[in-house]
Image (cartoon, rainbow, N blue to C red; front, side, top):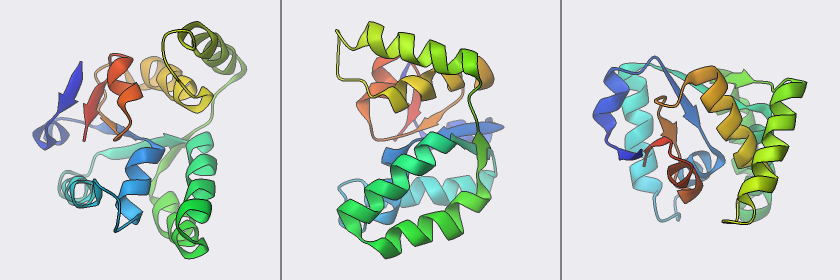
Length: 147
């Protein structure tokens, strides 16, 4: 599906946020920081439900601590996570994610976390639900991406 512009948020009830979005938002030196802030402002204006998975919370907090600093991880966990709707995969979704990871691993570098996100998005939100990410994997998987 490729890249979408911010106007899609006006029609969206729910969006899915990826680690790459949160990292860019919280790192002032990141290449897409300004764009991530624009997306965050649009989210506040249009107020769709922002969803993510517990696995992304874990991945992002760890990434922020190791690549930035402990304070960035604390801000993420204390200020951003409470505003999110967290999705917790069931056993079937975890199995599907592992199968997707193994299947697509031959084609490209796809993390297990991104494979799980793909399963959650397609099963729970629908393929047309916008994804907030600066990671090319979501576009390569045929999902609608706002970046």
